[in-house]
Length: 548
Image 1: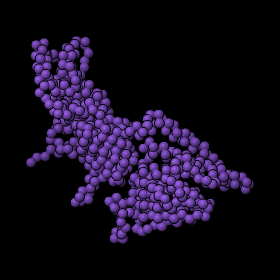
Image 2: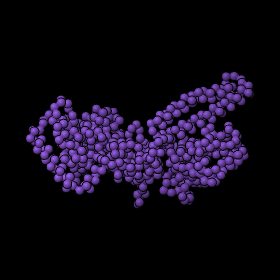
Image 3: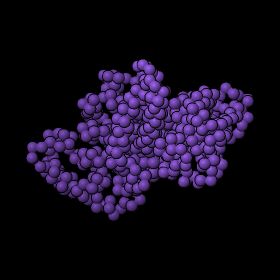
Image 4: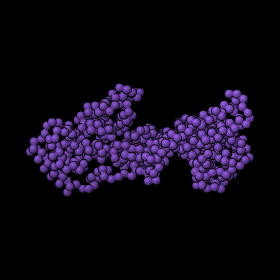
């Protein structure tokens, strides 16, 4: 038995760049175009994924040339749908190059972009089923093709300079009209169910991915409009894909809830979606196999915070923060010079004043950083990097970082590490940022001389997590979670100790940081709980006895 593995061979090896990228784009498109029914589903997904990855490396002229070379040989419906989602020149070339039967066109048309549908209307060789689906009035179409205005449209380029004889045209029009009249009375309505995609809106999409994050099955839209899209890589520019939170959740094999997802191409699916999904594993091997979930259109409240005006304001805010950091850093630098007497002796009063200025400037910088982080989270730009963070390293860093704060408040912070504790499945910067902001806010909410108790333990399960439980500081006991997370919520006492933006803002920031890292922040009557993903494997071995 012979097996055609040319496409797999082309896709092997390192990712091409430069002129090699254009060559591979042409090869993949050519191989897919000619074997629509002989490529297995995995090959189709691999081919479309490679074309999408190569897109930005291949100039428009090269893509157009490659598609034009397929003239009369483009028989792959998924490839045609993908090409029609490209720019206008590639789309027009693909419509011209396509060679599909009338029945095949009726399956493809609902999945085409608007440009593709309009270009297809100009082809004179469409069958009656396709014309009916495109709502083409046959007599008008004949007149359009007969006009002699000197212009060249897509239909003329397909048919060439030759024209039909008047008698042939009349016979064809009569035949099509008779066929449509007969079909209107004989064809049951249910035979045209697939055409509902062309006129009805879709509010939900059930989907399934493979272990690489590529969508391999969908229920709701035409499959060609979503199959082949990945949920593993965050979207960039105007391309399809999830936000940073969704991509990070995939890497950690964590459930994702209401992640932002952008789809492109066919108008029926193009736009923003909200995606919720869970990972699934093989029953016998336990090996990760992919995600199953649902996408839905965002409601008005979810859309309201992300319109163009808000995006512009967010960018202006981030620019303002950047501009404020520069003079603050200069102030801190000069204050430290005076305090350390680097340019000569300074009196005690001057050094004390410089120390106060330094502390206040750093407090402002911390507040600006919190605003910047909050804006990035809101924009989906905050991404926790993969990596491992050792709990012992984290506790040592926190002890150093919080030393001056605990000393100034005379707070006794006691953290019990319930062995064995696995490494955090996050980069050290993200883990330290989350813990430092949570503990800083908690220490500031304490009375002078108060004791804070915390426990850190690993909860073992299908997706192990590290759980950190912190006792509630006295000044925020009895306050409801809703009020505690209110951004306007402050702390009574010395204003120099309080977070620049308030306790409520700080706790909401910690919660959002945890969520962006596939964790959570929960608040009960007596404690505050922080959950972050733990390493999936451990060298602790048999000593792991804790259960989820």
